[in-house]
Image 1 (cartoon, rainbow, N blue to C red):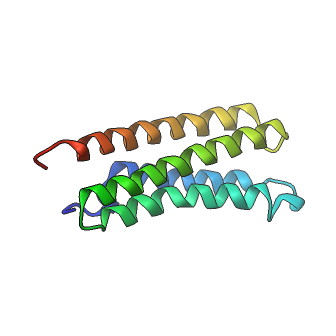
Image 2 (image 1 turned 120 degrees about the vertical axis):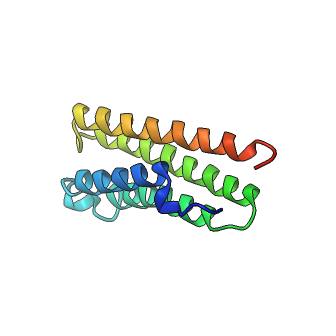
Length: 121
């Protein structure tokens, strides 16, 4: 791909998402340090990481596959956020605002996948 992954808006927004996840998990109970908090951080970090790795691949099909992985990690992290909310680790407002960003990232990933699937690129 000719564009740097750093120029992709979906990568930039997913980096912001990771930052927000790390801020939220700072307030998790100590006993969740290596549990849900760590798992949530890992799934969030996987989103921009897969976007970056996929953009460096030689073929569009490979990039698309990494975008599918990024989307899966996003949905995993959104589920983990909902669990954290149910357990009282994050409030409803934080959940909603973070979910809104996640929804936007999901739409951006889907749009990028669709554009990469178009013939003639």
